[in-house]
Length: 314
Ligand code: NAD
Ligand code: UDP
Image 1: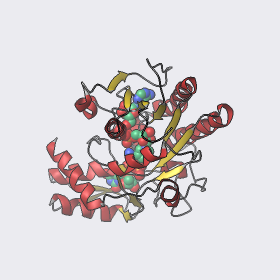
Image 2: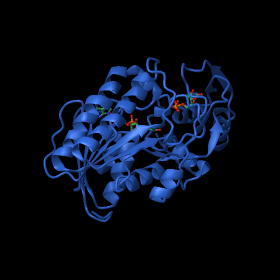
Image 3: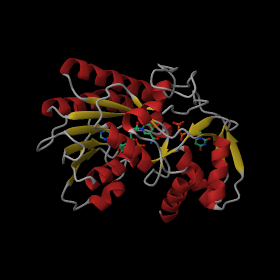
Image 4: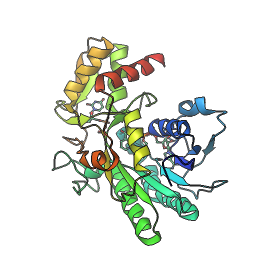
């Protein structure tokens, strides 16, 4: 199979932020897409522009129930899962189900068709990391019973299940460990720092910095991340690959960028740091660079301008 073949691709989480951008990219590359979503945290608005596209079909379905698709399947991309801390703490059981039963059902679909399978995993697999920056060989520092465990352990289980299906059935699997990604179509009220700060700045409200704001993150623009996923789905690498932007900053610095780019004079309101909030996070992307020839292209300033424009338009 070459990267140019027209594939029949099934994407779970298609009405979500990243899933909808991934569908756009697959369609632009002339693949056909069946998008599945139960709309738990996603929105039909994210895929409204695809209504009537002859190579796109949307199926409203919960992937924790068995998944059947009419027609051939060449690739299965599993993104369905609540993803923001606010969402997964609100839906902890649904999150564990999406990573366990949901991953099992999507893997089973891939197995039936001998299709490729890609899992959207997360930097949360590293927990509150003791190694910095994080590379794929680090096993992580995760609290298995804390408030974030429903997400972290769900994804760690999903990775283990994916590797088991590769080992037992010879499935061609890929695992993307995605670091903080942002862009248009994020839900305004999902509590993540990017929509939260932009929304607050645009409304002239104080930005809510959790803790003293010295914790760090690095932010990858959606089109860069999707390009990484697209390259990874054609790779023969079975072990996890980090995809994220290695430019690291404190949350305080990030707030300053948002305020400057929105033109707002932001007051700051400090709130308690949530339990187990990782203090540092930055991907080591050497593996993605070497293996996929991939690295982020969109600078924070440009990505933030596009995202602010989107939120202004809502
Ligand atoms: P999102 O909430 O916008 O998208 C997730 C989508 O999955 C939603 O549309 C939701 O309705 C759907 N979904 C949830 N449970 C489902 C189920 N049981 N059946 C069918 N659909 C279901 O979140 P996102 O930011 O687009 O994240 C997409 C994926 O990428 C997730 O798997 C997430 O863990 C992973 N990821 C995202 C980030 C990030 O920074 N955005 C970072 C790391 C990993
Ligand atoms: N954060 C913040 N204010 C907010 C939302 C988040 O200071 O209104 C912080 C949060 O504590 C974390 C970082 O921003 O340290 C990133 O949070 P987000 O929920 O976007 O993603 P996470 O990386 O924690 O999954």
